[in-house]
Image (cartoon, rainbow, N blue to C red; front, side, top):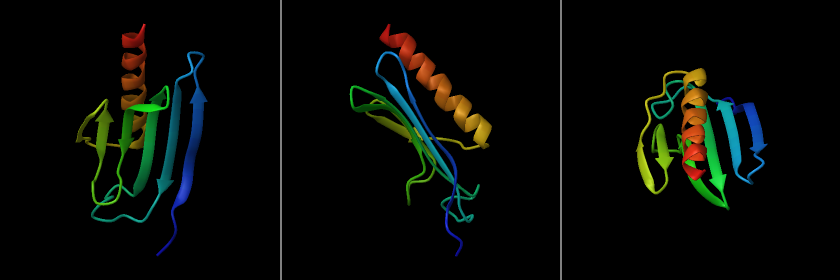
Length: 96
């Protein structure tokens, strides 16, 4: 089986000390990852995850928001990043 191929690895440190970290790999398509991607996108404030999008083994595509977790409907990479950044923007607006 071919290994995962890293496509995106980016870390953004905002002036307010919050961090957004995005990792995306191309992987073989499986039942768990029918789109062929493994990803982890997280927004951190004071060392605590505020928002997270991932598809950890056995859990499928899902999103963390605060202490909640819900199914995330993956459409494509652009939509994934748009949804993540929209959530980050909303969280930052709520902070101020």
